[in-house]
Length: 423
Picture (cartoon, rainbow, N blue to C red):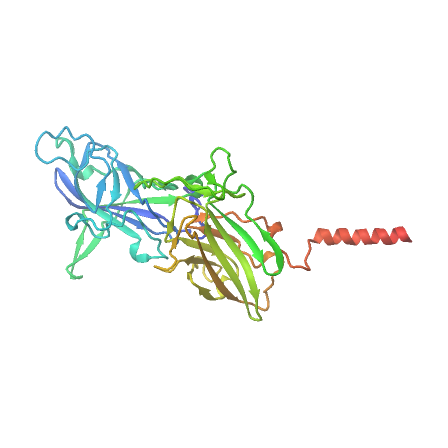
C-alpha cells in the first residue's frame, strides 16, 4: 500500500521512492571543533539537478562557524569581527549558503565526489554522478557554551526550485572503507535530511506540452492554447516573434536566466511531438521530436519519460538511449529516453538547432493491438521531470472510418426521421 502521509503534492507515481537525501557525518570532534562530511545523494530515477546546481543552506542553532572547507565553499564569509587575531573562519553566517566547486579546482581544495558545479545526475541516466560531497571544520564563536557536538543545524534547503527538506534525524553511524578495503572506520554520529520534489512548488504554470499526429489522419493536434501562459499576459514568459533577434542573455553562475521563448499559441519552452509514423505487419513505428523554444537556455543531460501501454514491446530505439522504468512488478509501461553522450545529450536553445528526435519500433500484440480511440498515443509524458500537458483525448487523431458513438446515433435517428417523413 502506498503511504500518502507527509508531503502529498510531492508524490510521483512514476518514481514513488525518489528523493534527495543529505547525510551529515561527524568524523571527528573535541570540545571546540568538529570535522563534518556532508554528502548529497540524488535517489531520483529520472529527475536531475542541472546548471546552476544545488545551493545547500542551513541555520545554526547557536553561534556556529565554518573554519575551513574542502570540496565546496560558502557564498559569503559574513561578519567575522568577533575573531580579532589569528585565523579567520571561512564563514561566520548564521545561515550559510554552500555551493559546489567548479571542475578543475586546485587539488588541495578538492574532496571525493566534489567539483561538478552543483550538477547531480539521476540514478538511471548516470549513476556514477548522482553524489556530491564536501568536508568542513566547524566550531563556535564562544567556547564557553556546550561542546561542538551539539551543533546540528536545522532548516535545510537545497536552493533548487520545487524541493522541500525535512528536519535532520539521527541514524546509525556511517561506516567508511579505507586502505583498499582492509579497514573500516565509523563516524562519531550521523544525521539524515530528506528532500522531496513538487512540480506545483517549482513553478506556477507548466513548462512543457505535447502535440500529436498520425499517418492515418491529416489533422495535426497542436498543444492546447495558452498551455504555459498567454502572449503578453502578466506572469507569462517574454516571447520573440519571427525575425526578432533575442537580447544578449547575461549568464549568472548561480541563478538560471529568465525564459525568453518563441511566440507560439502555447507559449511553452519545450514541445514534444508524438507522430504515429507507419504500420507494418508485426510492428508499428513512432517518431518523437523534442523542440526547445527557449532562447535563453540549453538543456544538458535532458531526459523524456513516457507512459504508454505498449512500451513493454519496444524492439528498437534509434539515436536515443532507452531504459524501462519498472516500478510496479511486471507492469512495463514506462520508459526513459535520453541523449547519447557527445552526440545529442545537449538540447540546444531556440535559434541554434534546438531540437532532437528519435524513432522507435514496437511489436504489435495481435490480441490487443489497435489504433482506435487514441491507443497509439502516450498516456503521460514528462521532460526533465516536469509533466507535460497533453491534448484532450477527444481531440486525438481518429481513424478515417471512426466516429464518436453520439454522432453515429444522431445519423441513425436522422435517417429514421427521413424514412418516416417520406412514408
